[in-house]
Image (cartoon, rainbow, N blue to C red; front, side, top):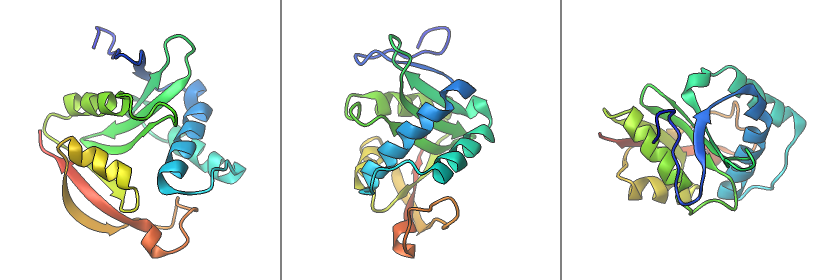
Amino acid sequence: MNAEGSILSELQFEVVPFRPEYALEVVKMWRRSFQRAMGLEEQNRFGEVSRQLDFLSNMDPASIHIALDPGSSAVLGFMVLSDGELDHIYVRVGYQGMGLGTALLNLAKLQSPAGIELFVFQRNRSARSFYERRGFKEVGRGFAGFDGNPWATDREDLADIKFRWEG
């Protein structure tokens, strides 16, 4: 990490603070990555995109970290971390498995040395495996709500697992 808080890896990316001009590209990348991980049809319905843009605009910008390609400024990933809670970490389809998610998670661990909690949908096996391989332990199970999850067709779609990493 350099003095400005950027992280560089073999992939060549930098982590920068969120700015409003990244919002639409972040949402499109986030949706595609989520839809792929959950086995959903890839689409960008206006109402859903609009709700996710509103969600981002209502968050503390300091909690949103954007991974950019330094050559093109393309959004390669992002995470939302606040008070030891990791709400989101997504990597652009085509860049997964290259160390970007691990680098973002390592940054989260540095910023939350007392520990991190997060939720993962049970059906997202790749995310569950990702966190387990990086020291997270299951601490609970439950169900997310239908609000904000228009893709869910029944309660089982919303089954989630709470994970914790102890610093």
